View 1 (spheres, rainbow, N blue to C red):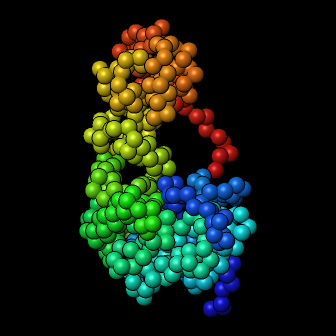
View 2 (view 1 turned 135 degrees about the horizontal axis):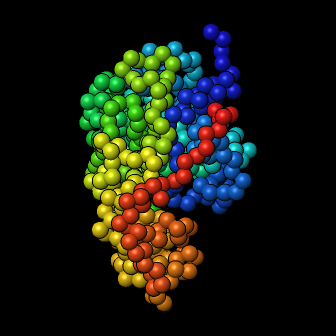
View 3 (view 1 turned 90 degrees about the vertical axis):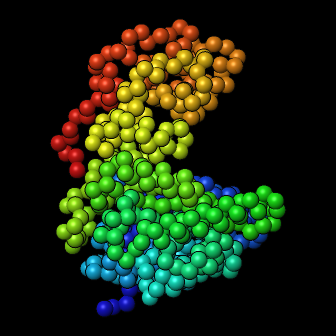
Length: 413
């Protein structure tokens, strides 16, 4: 086989990395190398963005170190038995590419993952070395997200946290039995144990930084994970229960959901087609309710159908329609927790209501200024000059509030 050019490797390894959704650069600390004589910062103007085929924004150089892999996870396009074209960067290749792209203002940082080659420890050493050279040799101040290898030595994971803004470990599937069936070389127990270790170290580092600003940082953007949706029969209730447990036990910053994509030469144990992307979207909405709106998994699944979220309406509206006795909510008197449960009211809108009502009683025109769409909240709130009457008793309220049907496009792809 002829030797691949760097451009050819980039085409292969950037394409191989597109299945990983956990690349958001939020949550880290601000860093700027202007005064150090180095290069890069975690913020800036004129950053170019690229987009995955389904529209998700990617503003990082998002690549694999290599798509060779010892493991044979059935859902993975890079599994050892896959027939995909293989490529591998050297550590210096990735360092050079990151700096070159950054200087051209194409990216704001690096997201680096890898297939597992030789051993988990060897692979992790290579990932850490990329981050070390960027930080120590080139004083790179941009964002670095490293995908860690759960089977690697804990000391290597600790070293990774010294250089990376965020670390992540993919749990991949919400159920241990599914992990054993579809990824036999992986262990759900070991993945959670590694998450626990990272969470503990991140917490300790934050505590140390509160007592001394000279204390070393450790993955200041926290750690995250990703679950593949639709590769196994787990329903939305199971997925959200797993996410809730991960947030509660290990202090994860984010759980990302990635709809399963059929891959070439797939195993017979996998579905033939991907789930609707709207299912992924509903899970993100439900995840938001778990983290910022005080909902439990049981609350969210109240409006579910056989363990799955309603794809027609968002989970918050589904809950409200199943709990009409809790409405209408008086915007001039209700506590924050009750306001957060009103469909159409977000955390920003609730904050504005709480501040505004300290000065005067809120009327309908005040809500129109505060809310993006007051029409959506009207059946669920009371204001000084507004009461929904018997709207909540209406049998067709669901049909009135659901999004209008879209006209099919003959030429849509």
